[in-house]
Image (cartoon, rainbow, N blue to C red; front, side, top):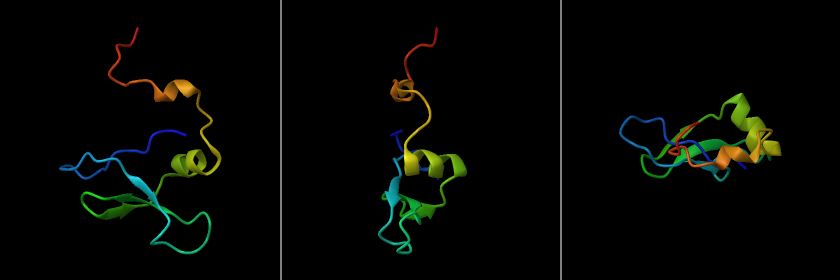
Length: 70
């Protein structure tokens, strides 16, 4: 699974959570939730695909983004 995105609020950089507790009872009805600023966002189509069935990208997606690119 890919790491969840960070909060899009300018003053917040907390990781988002996949919230299913405050949405409909449908198994695939979820939103991104930020615990710090307490806001919800709809996931993008790509995020729905990745977090529903697993990522189609290679495992290298978990590499440290601060590592120098060569």
